[in-house]
Length: 376
Ligand code: 13P
Ligand code: SF4
Image 1 (tube, rainbow, N blue to C red):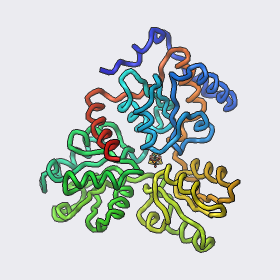
Image 2 (image 1 turned 30 degrees about the vertical axis):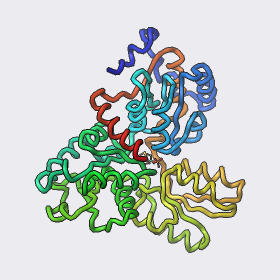
Image 3 (image 1 turned 45 degrees about the horizontal axis):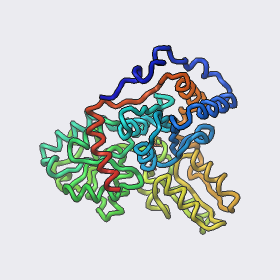
Image 4 (image 1 turned 90 degrees about the vertical axis):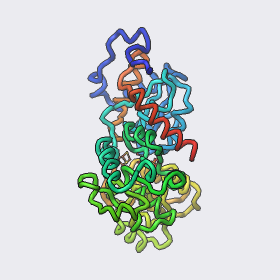
C-alpha cells in the first residue's frame, strides 16, 4: 500500500502554506524563492520539466525531456520528491514508476491534457464490449494507449495484454503489438496512430476511425473485420492548428528550407514535412543540422521560441509553423508562483498537490508501462 501524503512526516501535522501567499507574488520574487527552496531540499528533490514548459519554469528543471525520457528519469530517480513540471498524466506516470515512498507532485493540479481527456475508461470499455459483437478482442486486438492518457486507461491496457507508447517509440510499440495480435485499438491520438501505421506500410484504408460518440464507433462489422488499426477519434488541440497551407507558403518562400513536425500534427502536415518526431527528436535534429539552415517547426510555441533563441548564434533560423499562437495552455498553468508554493511547502515538511494512482490501478498501469520500457 502506498502511504498517504499526510503520513509522510511528523511535520505534516501542521497545515500547509496556502497558495494565497504566492498567487500575487512577482515573478522575480518567485524565482529567488524557488532557487532558495531547491538549495534547501538538495538531493531530496528532483524537478522534471517537459519541453513545452515555459522558460521561467523550465530553467529550474534538473532534467528536461520528451515523455519517454522523463518516464525513464522518474523510474530511475532516487529523490524523495519528484516535482513534475508538465501535465497530469506525466505526474501519474512518475507516481506509477517510482517507489512507493517517493512522492510525485504536480504544481498545479488543473494542468491536464485536452487530448488525454478525449478517451475515458467508460468509453474504451464500451468500445471493447462493442468490438466483442464482431470479434474476440482479447484474442485479436492489442490495446495501445498513447502515454497522453489517464492511468486507468494504462491499467486497461495492462489488464488486456496491451501496452503504452510515446511519440518517440510508437512504431516500435506497434511492431510489438502486432507480434501479439493481428489488430490494434489505438487511443486517444488518431494522428500519432495513423502516422505510425502509415510509416510501417499499413494502407490508409486498413486504419479506421472509431467515433466514440457513435454506436459501434460509427463503423460497420465489415470495416472492423478488415481494419488493422482502429484509431480513436482524439487529437491534440495545439497540434491540429498546423495546416498544410503553412508548409506550402514556407516552401514557396524558402525552397531550401526544412520542415519538421510532431506526429500529433495531422496526417497531411506530417506527409508534407521533411522530418517527423517527438520533441526530443526535433531538438536533436535541429541541433545536428548545418549552420544556415532555415527550419519551419510544427510543435508547441514555448519549445519553438527556445529553439529559435538557442540556434540563432549558429546561424540557424527556426520559424514557428502557424501565424497564430499555439501554446499548450494547460502546461502553461505550471507557473513560478505554483512552483515556489509547492517547494516552500516541502521545505516546511508539507506535501501539497501530490499525485497518486490507486494501488490496484497502478499495478496494472505499471505492467503496460513496463512492457513499453522493455520494448523501446
Ligand atoms: P513528446 O514530448 O513525448 O514528444 O510529447 C509531446 C506532448 O504532447 C506531450 O504531451
Ligand atoms: Fe496534451 Fe496537446 Fe498539450 Fe501535449 S500539447 S500536453 S497533447 S494538449
